[in-house]
Amino acid sequence: MSRPARFLAVLLAAASVASILPPAGLSAQVVRVAPTRPVRFSTTTIDKVAYYNLADLAKYLGLKGAWAAGRKNYTLTGKGPKLEFVLEGDGRKLLVDGLWLHLGNKVVTRGSNLFLSVTDYERTLRGILSAGDAGPLPPVPQVIVLDPGHGGADSGKTQGDLSEKVLTLDVANRLKRLLEGVGYRVVLTRTEDRRLELRDRSDVAVAVGADLFVSIHFNSLDPASNSAEKIAATGGPEIHVFTPAGQRSTDAWSSGEDNIETKSAPVNQHDAWSSLLAHALQKQLVAGLKTTDRGQKTGHWGALRSLDCPGVLVESAFLSNPSEARKVATPEYRDQIAAAMAAGIDAYAKTIKGLRSER
Ligand SMILES: [Zn+2]
Image (cartoon, rainbow, N blue to C red):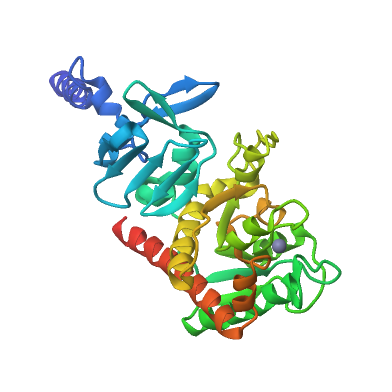
């Protein structure tokens, strides 16, 4: 290479380096990549718990906040579900499109601002309100594992002729037929009256590569510790997800028991999606059975703990409630329970499918 040619080559190399260097002061823009998750809001620590200001969340979600008369309720409305925070009582409940959801931490009022715990938003509400940015999307469910609660020597709750282990298997079989009818592959953790350890139940889901897991149960109040009036007045389904790390489960709080687990369980990776599934099931069960809404709750359920897919536990009805027990005793009502669950699972699947097609 001649001297002038070499000089030109050096000049061109320098120019090409210069062209990829950002102008002074703009280097941050050049290295920035599109965020995969939205910018986080600032947090405030209250009683050792990290909180978001609801005003920040409302702004991000494009919702409008308003206090109801007397400042007992605060509503957020806009696109998506309507949220209504109920500040009376323990402050751990809100209505999502009219359906009760039990929070892990209480909502805190400071002046005219309301604060929601980071865990309650990220783990429980985000999947319902803003599923599109609740992390990597799960697969559109194809393989569903149904878990008939109890079995063998463990009858579960009993009431007269009704035995929980028999009812859970009956409803699971009805639900299996419905889901298979619309193309899902369904596996039951047990198909006969035999005892299964809790861990065995999630192991089935892991072994078959389940996309969803639903554990089926029936509820009951103990007559030794509840009045006849309370027993007669208590009915309706409850939908449980595994308690997020760092929170108490719904019913532990009310008894004052501290059952916080600081480490995440495997199923906690799927919290946002388990919550979305729980909400979809709750909506269909409450509407389909025309019954009381006892809400979406959390609990440290052994059958859910080791799942590697979204999972919920459904307490379908109260055997201790005489009128509900009479209904549960009929195949027609058990068909209705199964149909509502199938509709909930299908609604969840449609949401995931919709989100996947948007990305
Ligand atoms: Zn049970």
